[in-house]
Image (cartoon, rainbow over all chains, first blue to last red; front, side, top):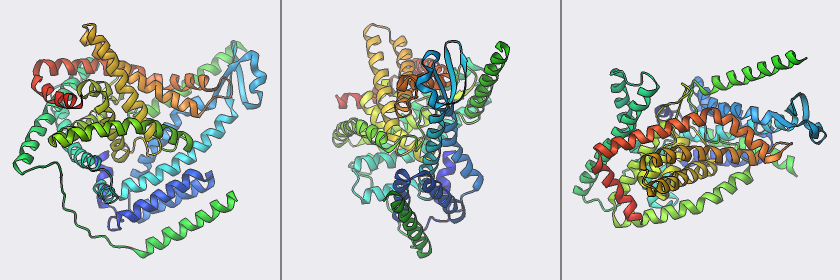
Length: 264
Length: 253
């Protein structure tokens, strides 16, 4: 799946906008969404759907699949949030919280009022913040994020490690999927025992292959006079689009006014 | 009345289990990543503050290492990428479903826990950026459970068992308990934020822990076996490679 996010980040319709604008827009929305009430959060999420699907041209189905990840986690945590258990003898302590319940031996199992309120808050907050994050992921390629980080004086070790890791991840993913295809063609992963054994072989091979890769790359870099700094040429061809800037600023100021009016 | 009650309970259990199975089977869960937006701001900031000292310390020691020996930057990045790919592989779990290993046990034993905490946080960042698992506000909490607690627990258990002369058992328990520690810490993190009305944080912890236990305990045991098998293979066929990795540990000390 991650190849798809990455390739969409490079091929979406907002690619030509300067990454600083997109990052700034998403981060400001992120902060606003984090501190505001649930109605504003829903508004932000819907507005971002328009940005992502219509303006950036991300396939709707794919975006829904991505949104299913936080919703899946939310559904996983619903049972512990909604279901309350208390001792039957101390039922007076939590009578207020019970919507519907029945006794179970010495305990009392019930649907919690507080749980419903909490899960509602989490749902909108998680939807809103995830949309802001997805806007960054789907419209700004990772390489450009690193360039922005470099521009704002992030430690070089961090940016170098991120840059190198990003490149190696794709090499190693290809290697791993080739290994696993070869194993499957030879009856690997037939049952659980075989599966664990095959996977252990794949991981060990992957480690030796990555170290082999390290040796080759470090030889290559040494022969080219590597001093600990990697410089990558970066062509800048961004175009400011006033139509988008106007919509972003107008929409954001409307939201900001509503939030301020609600709070003061 | 009694049979009605039983029927109701059975129905409820069936519904909740089938719900869980549906959620967790098609898209093997990275169950231990708290999703974006789950933590309120105060707790997100708290977990960030708790993890930053570890990260700063790790980065300081690593930048010392890489200044002396710039090539090790490549080795570090490759190890990080290895950790990422490892965590994206599907591990066949005991119950028949599929899930992802955390890789913290193997990483802690191969690279040492303090290097692993930096690499682990980079891996988590990439999982958030490339796979959309986890998030920015919850990254602090996730780093704490998965890149700090997990590797340290795995490493401490491994070292104790090795000093007793039982290396294989040490690797098994290191990887298994490292994974379990991650899961326990995540449940605690969620329980503190959402305490139950009756019984408070403790009751909530039991509820969250119980839900995650369905997927995590079999997964932890599988990961333990897997790590032992990987280690056996590396010991018999890849001594040279293990020597290369020792570079990171020695330089750090």
